[in-house]
Image 1 (cartoon, rainbow, N blue to C red):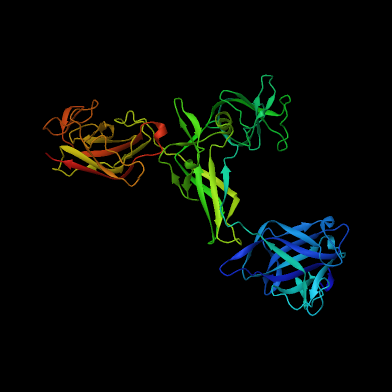
Image 2 (image 1 turned 45 degrees about the vertical axis):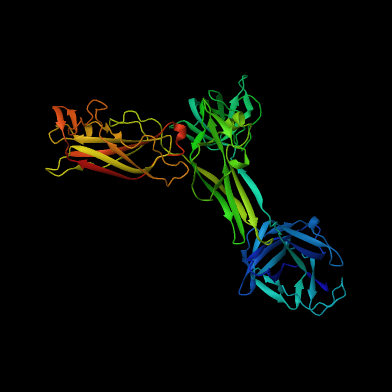
Length: 545
């Protein structure tokens, strides 16, 4: 370096980003600068900015590019060979071919800094060679005012820009569930003058001595006081059903955690249940900043339950990873997974997470890498609202969770029907149930249509006909007829060789003027809800014999 320049207010150096062809840019990790003098008490601040009309624009600071270095960490030398490193808090993206500038300010406006520069045509004091050019450096400026720069002719600041050099093989990161809990409470008793639970309140278990138990601790996220559902974070686990808890409102985050007598108590309650949520599909929502030269793939591994009673089993084998697509729904067709409360994880999974997402990153060049932005990291669990209970579906108040009811069809005068067939095209894997009900009404019936019984129709198709559980596109056709014997009092039936009939308020009615169809979908047990039936169409044919 031939000379030094005093840093009176601010200096800036314009530079151009140059990377191999076909690569869109690089991630800068740090910048080295070289000083001859420094302040004994004031440090420095460096930022990378974009340009406007060819000049540095301090209103366009590149994200995460501002760095401060304290006075004691500024290195000086008389030869310009000792660097002071300005390391960015996170790699800074710089686009290929773009021009940027780093802006250097002395904190406190200190005039005590001098920085090494090079002047075209002068001699480098370290090598003795003439300084002729620097193809990536353009113009250096000093600040005349806070918004005006004056160019320093033929002079460049000595600097080095370091970039991240990425591994071109693959790397993986596993994201796990946070230490969250969901309790259902009972016997909630509030202290006089206190409102309901608030976010930030602290939850403690209660030891036999009546004192707070710090091994059982969590923070309140929200409380549903209609259903007594308490949502918690930062849980230690170790809670159990029917155990007592104490709710403490402290004035400072985490201020009350010691094993001392209960003070600041706003409520006491019991845990009615620790809630483990079944999920039948997931949607990963991970911040993914992938470019064309890199890729990120995602996989899911969770926890299922088996046995009687059901006991959680964590998936741990390499073959248990299931490929999922970021931001898209992934259905499970093999078994129900569960998101466990932290206490269930501690007690039944040895503290391991019940949910894992593995992200595998790869890149074709060491200049660029996929990036996961962990400010956006969540997993949406979807529960299929289908169950095993199909009781009382012949009435208005059947127990099935999932059903389809057609509109009421009124037949034209003279076209009253005497029989009914229903055809369904659908996906019906093993351990699922599809039932078809019909409601009929004769024009002479004095009852309203709505109060009539639903009649369970008979499946004509082989009862052992199922769809391939591994192929949700395997739709089959199923046929249903009216039964030959009424399944319940008031339901319709077709006696051998005779028209359909049912018993009403004034005797037996033959044939019908109106009808409606109900399709009930269910599963063998509630834990079978992961693979549910799907219908593409329902066709009903009113017949005259």
